Amino acid sequence: MPEVSVIIPVYNNERYIEECVRSVQNQTFADLEMIVINDGSTDGSGEILERILREDKRIRLFHQENKGAGAARNKGLDMAEGRYLIFVDGDDWIAPDYIEKLYTAAEERGSEMVICGFTCVTETGEVLREIYPKESRRFEGEECVFQISAVCSHFYRKSLWDRYGVRFSAKERGEDMPVSLFFGAVCDKISTIISCGYMYRQHSGSAMHNFRGLRQFSLPLKSLEETIQKIEKTGVSNSPEFYELFVLRILSTCFFQLAPGASRERTKELADYITRILHTYFPDYSKNPKAGLFKGAEVPFVQRAAVKVLIFLVRTGGIRFAACLMGRKE
Image (cartoon, rainbow, N blue to C red; front, side, top):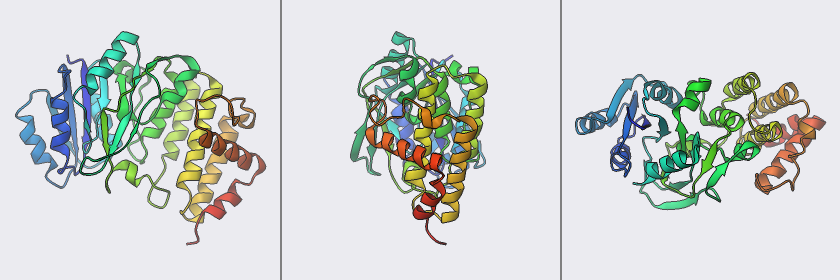
């Protein structure tokens, strides 16, 4: 059995998929398997993968009809045999020592999740910026909540996924968001390392590039609510106050970053959704002692300010009016 399963969802990545797979093949950590899910590609991705498959017995290739990145990742999760797992998108690549660093941290610190940074690059590989944790150590309890980010820079113990039966939304974009929320609430053995070994390629077809407002993007609202319900049943391992703040942070990001420019109808729908979520599951949201402007350094000041404004708008009933101001007429 391999120690690490590398799950690679692929959809029309013929320009980049060979570089992606080669970067995994060339890892300094060799005890791994690659689970590659060709999610109904209509370009030459499948042919490239079939060719590479013949060179490396560690590759397991699956073809399926196009069902989306979430469904492709779920297929990989179902097939994974490693003790640990990571996700690498088919248009990205990883540094040669990426897995070794993450694996070493997980083993030495007894962590169920290790988080590193990532490097944003252009289509041609030119570095745009690096985003990485401020320190390298193990976090416990309430500190864990705000270490969670996108799954592409996370290294997981597979038993963590199996224990809770966590899977990605197969029908909504933004499938990372509910998964990150769940693990932020229940995982209390998290480490970070100061490394930017994941190369995230920004181009017209990439997820981050397309995550630009409700006009082009459907938020995973149903999945978010289902995740909140699942967390209620499972129980919050970390600080309930920080978990609530994490939810407020996600909702404020949705409202202030994605709503502007969408139709007034869609922004009002989002406003109603946020109001219902907070009143139903977090009735004391406005009294959260962690939601002040100057309450520690876990959340950047700008995000804290956005949370405070969102709380004010929901509490006073002004969120629909704000939504109308941000939305555009059809």
